[in-house]
Length: 205
Image 1 (tube, rainbow, N blue to C red):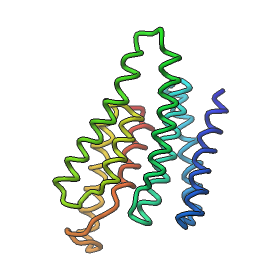
Image 2: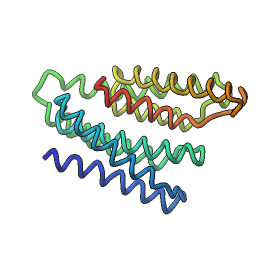
Image 3: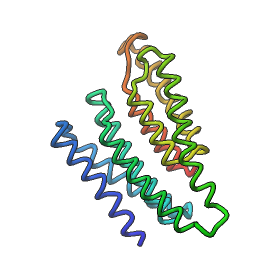
């Protein structure tokens, strides 16, 4: 069964990668290499953490999905609505499966409430940042963090947001210090969201 999980994660990410290759001209072998690396690392670590089948599948799909999103955002400075819709649809199916498999346990309420709480917290906080930043963040970033919150839940969302902001700030400071960018320049936030998500999940938060 665990072998099926890792195959499913790789297959889904490769389908997304192939779609991006054809439709968005993102001709990068690095994306496929990172897909395999992240999937294998995630699979091994999630096994070590003792995660259940559905949780492992949920995290592997999120890791591969956000990796694809970050590659496109870095190249084109856009976050695809279609990719986010696919992610939300898959998460909804997994949530239904989680609810069914835990219908007789005390964790059912938490399993149902936490994803929706994460969705609204992620979307609301980043909408506020989007409103206050005056184009510093894009609407795609708001939808991205709502999607991440839907996958990881409210509790895990906060370290994801903190690390994403930390990585973004550190990169911006270094680039300004090296005179590579100016203070008024904008950067795609997707890669930092991906980095924050990956570090948080792979460390077992």
